[in-house]
Length: 171
Image (cartoon, rainbow, N blue to C red; front, top):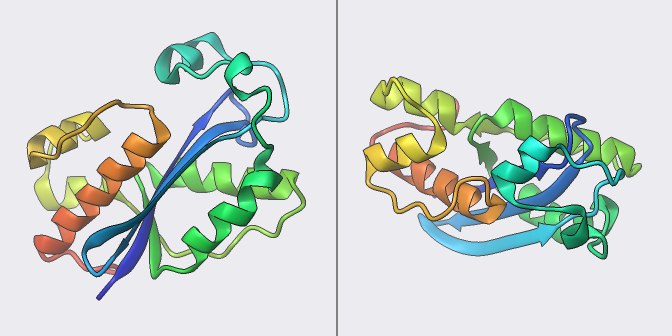
């Protein structure tokens, strides 16, 4: 049975290395096996106001959080111990992961990734494929958009629906 990790990053500014939150949901045997969330102290104190409006994370909230290098020892085993990683708009989340790794002096992992945005378009042909819209279409309970753990959980549920509908990684 397929194992995967659904992940989501929130960023503080327009630079890819500015992760301020990460959420990961690991699925094994068709069941959620692990959930992980951490705030991350980004390398700059600059937070773009429109991003704060989206995710609600401020400098005061992350001031004492670990930098990415401090989160990596917990994050890495979740991502590296699965068949693939999924994210809604995977190119964005993978670029954040790569930039944060490089900024921290960590070799970026080579991951097989799948994008639930693309999976949703292909399988269900929805005109609106924002995460909340796709969750609504699939009947997935969704708590709070732009909360990294809630977004990762929703992404994991979308992949489970896709697997149930016959989608297979690599297809």
